[in-house]
Structure formats: C-alpha cells, structure tokens
Image 1: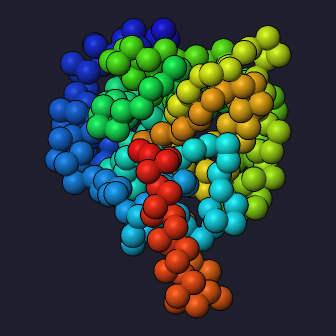
Image 2: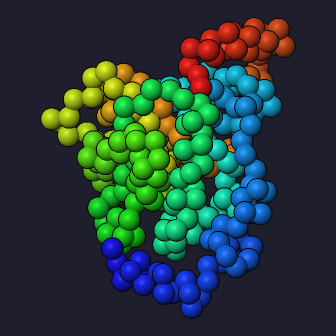
Length: 263
C-alpha cells in the first residue's frame, strides 16, 4: 500500500471526496450520477455485445465472430459519469472507484449467472503496470472475488509485449496491434474450465479476443468476457447487399440459435 492510500482517511477528512463527474461532495461517484448512467439494454449482438436495434447477431460477427469468446457483455455505455469514472480510476489513480464499478459487475453476474471457474483480468505489460502502480482490471475482478467468491487468477494470462494504445486505431489496426501479445504459461492446464475475462472497457473486442486465444489453446472449455462499459462502434444487423427476404432469414436463424450462447 502506497503513502497516498495510507493517508487516504486523513485526506478525506481534510478534503472530502467529490464526485469525479459532477463535483458534488460526499462520494467519488455520487448516487445521482450513478442513477443517470445509461445502461446497455437487452438489444445487443449476442456475440460481440455491441448495442443494436434488435437482439441477434450483427453482420460483422457473421463475417468475423469473436471466437473463441462465446460472448462479450458490458453494463454501461462508455460515456458520461461512467466514462469519467473509468478514466479517473485508470489514469488518475482514484482507486476508490474500483469497488463502485466492480459492484456493477457483481450485479450483472448475479442477474445472468453462469458457472465460472475463474476470473481472468486483462493483464497490463510490466512497464505500464510499473508506471500506473496497479491494474484496474485486476481491481475490478477482486471486487467480484470478495463478493461472490469466484477466484481471480492473475497468474494465468500474461502480456508478452507492450502494445500501442488502442484509442485511435481502427478495427483492423486494433487486431494487428494486440495479435500475439498474450500468453499462458506452458505448465497451466485449463482443460474443462469456464473463464470470465474482466476489463474496464470494450470497443471492438480486439484485446479481449487476443486474450482468449491463448486461453483456448490451453484447453479452456468456454470463455466469456465482461466489462464495465462499452464504447459504441457502428455496426449493422445485415449486409447492405442482402435482399430483405434473405436478411430476415439470416436474422431468424440467429434468433433461433441465440439460446445456445446465452446469457
């Protein structure tokens, strides 16, 4: 525990916490801002988790599904108070936000229960971890562990090389940027295990997918991913070249298969 964390109780007495979004005193993310945060509803692509107008499988996932991830899920849109809270946690070291954000992941798992053998926080490269002092994904996963008892396994997945920030890259560049950037130690056997990747934000899912690939090669039976927020990117249910009849048939097929990859 660093000096800042040890002095936190005293600092809070002298400088009471304020909401990182609206500035109200009392909490790092005030109840009003939490209440106004925009949740992602049920109308999503059941593979990549991207919000859509109807629930099904998006056209992009028909062409390039996020295998081996069975599904990516997120609680909020990456905007407003939630977006600011994630940035304040990640870039400004406001670790007090981790229990608040992690509680939303706990609630999601309770509402959509599946058997989970272990939580896998998306790892940081050693250099970035040293500079930041913590891995925000690991803090979020630990909240789940402390509440639900699902073990956090930070020893399973390692980041093998530093990568460029994904923020300003397009979908293809993101995939290329993180390709081969993660590995599982050779002595780790994941056969028969259902794993849940934990991260703060998903955009295209490129990082989560790159994480899942070595987990799958190590024998994991099923891999899911859960993030606090989703940064929306444009997608569509069907290809513009499809006739309306073909588009409906494709959608109906996806709807019938959706029960196989829930929640």
